[in-house]
Length: 448
Image (cartoon, rainbow, N blue to C red; front, side):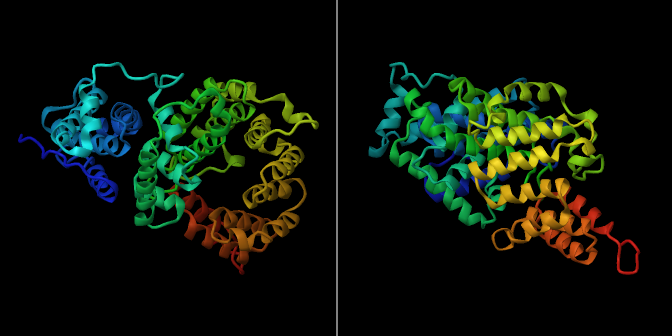
């Protein structure tokens, strides 16, 4: 087999388009064996972030790291289809990406603006210490979550680099055009490079100011895995939820006494514990009240409950967002059956959450608890007041459809289901909503 074309160095938009093109080339060839296809998919899913992070640490260039990693995976598709899967697929891709990066920098070392890279390749001195936790992905997470970047840019860049999502998947999650998201990610990487943001864990005294941003992004990455937004993505992306949990555990090592770090880890574990019961055998989302509770992971539940701070129940304290969300999940998990759920406590916890983290999403979720504790009519009045703010949000229409259904307004419920189906991006959720809509009685009493 002839040697693949050597990569050429690009920056900015050119790099973005090059990486996207090479990522598309990662799809195994039609003549690939199932073993090759599975190995490429598994290695990309499990190792993408680690390889990019390692190259970023070595070469100090996020664009270069991402481009060479994508190039190495594209090369693997061609090479493994002919020569078979190597004994250590991740090592093969890592070595190939490193060699490509070195070759590229050596070719460009003669250019005046490339002296730093050239000297780095020949520098015999050991590298500076890079942090208190020896994990490249955690360091890269702190780079992606630097306060110099906007929150949207932090989340998008983390989903791209740590989560391994494509630009199209991230754009869909943000409800923007692919080109808009590509430009946002390109600008974020350029800002990191221009600002000289170091590839390190912040100093201990700087951690508290940075951790809120990191926790926000970790939670959003977890949520993307918990209910993937892309219509072509698996309904649940366990690689994303697992990586978010792993990085949150490492963040806990940095800040072992931070109540919100503990709260977020508890929230993730208690949520992940239900993953096995959330999708039916035919690929439909299963509602919490319909899940097989015997399928919940009791080991994760036990660990999550042990992390919960008892101060959540202390009226003199002010627990944070993640502590309260974890406490709400704990109430659900404590109920042997859905009918045993302590909805009064959930309403109380959501009221406290509204004080700590007021948002229409929190109020929407509180309305669901109000429906169970009080009545669907009371909850519907709360939800309808959110129409101007959440009219384009699919969960608003899902909630409204269920409340209208509970009050006997089938025609209005069907309209709300239709709108929710139009806005839903997850195939499992769409299947669930279609079934719920089709169960509604028509005006003559028949089912649709």
